[in-house]
Length: 255
Image 1: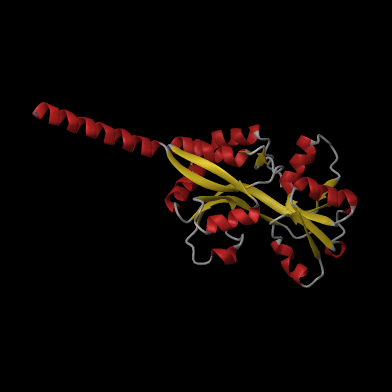
Image 2: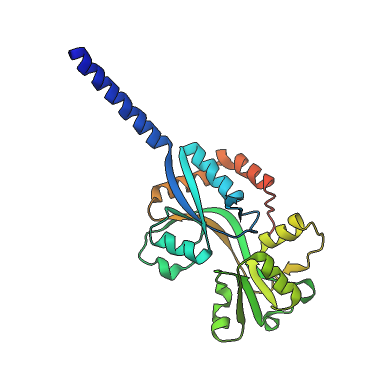
């Protein structure tokens, strides 16, 4: 009788141990991401599949820690709403300055992942014309051109949103808008790597207001994991693997 009881007790302990191991090794977290089709090298959402450099870096971290990240793609404004409502565990990419007013009261932590510059792209022949030549400004749907918000409110610049980068480029090329507020690296990747042209018809105008910062991953539910990601990105032991991913995704260092 004692042997049977002891056997059941040992088996119960075994099951508990296996359960704890599986839980520790298969913790699944949701990351809200944007559903832009052409946002390479940062990301791409095509045929219901999310990919890109940002995902690969985060998955590299997750593999080392025994986590599983599930990426859920939505339009930009919707992913913000779902994240702030606590229906997503993490938000990527994010930035402390984005929708800052809506984030008040939330203890959100951030870890920087990839550098970016958002600026105005114009026809190459129009580069250097200055702010007075910018009357109609396009941008991806959901983007906020913080450097131009006051000018838009004052009616000095008209704002035009486009659901995709392809449509945004066409608006610039056709003259429907004077410039497009967008990620400068994404534009270079599109024309240089996807279209394969040597002279870009649309170029970044550095004389116009722009913003250089980092794409972060953020969370207020799992701030401890944000700390782990931050340490992972800063650890020189991981530098070689991260740089190799940047090389594979052709993430140039030029802004």
